[in-house]
Image 1 (cartoon, rainbow over the protein chains, first blue to last red):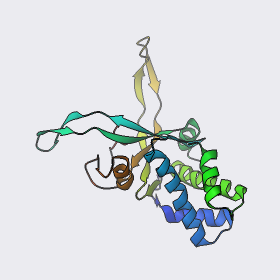
Image 2 (image 1 turned 90 degrees about the vertical axis):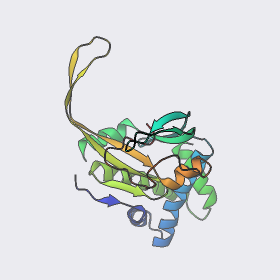
Image 3 (image 1 turned 60 degrees about the vertical axis):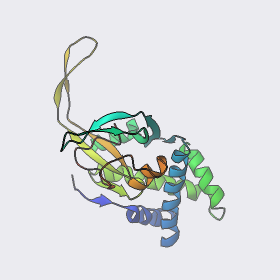
Image 4 (image 1 turned 45 degrees about the vertical axis):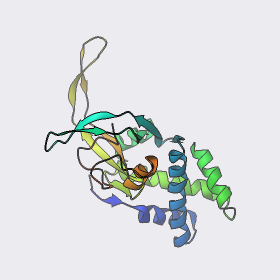
Length: 98
Length: 113
């Protein structure tokens, strides 16, 4: 584990190097990709990226939770959560560490 | 939405770009995230979410059908935690989570699992 954190700026830099657009435009396009994905998810659509993974929105019903510090029970409202499932290609790549 | 639909939508909004460049942009982004995770790095995209790796030790598992013990090798698994802004957008402004950060905290097993 090298323990670095990759951010938007690193993705924009990679796009800049690979595609040859300006740095500004590369960074705008990284943002656009994330925006398109978020818009689709907010509309309730799943996002499937082959050989990477899929993002889907799950509806969670109301349940009674507990404040782990105080032990007090609190209702947790119904809500939507985003679930990411990594593809086998990604899982294999991570385990080979290439 | 599939990857090709994502590419299509981006291409429509960026008519000055060649389709092959839009493809390359999308592939580069996901390849970069995958490479970072393979390298043991975290990927933090504020507002969207954070990808991280969890290490799982080797263990003795059990075949649930036969009850037989099987050795499960140590492995690394990718995790994703949804960012605060996206979580709020999914819930009409209400933050369904608790801690108010965008970090995939150690020991946090995915979003709402």
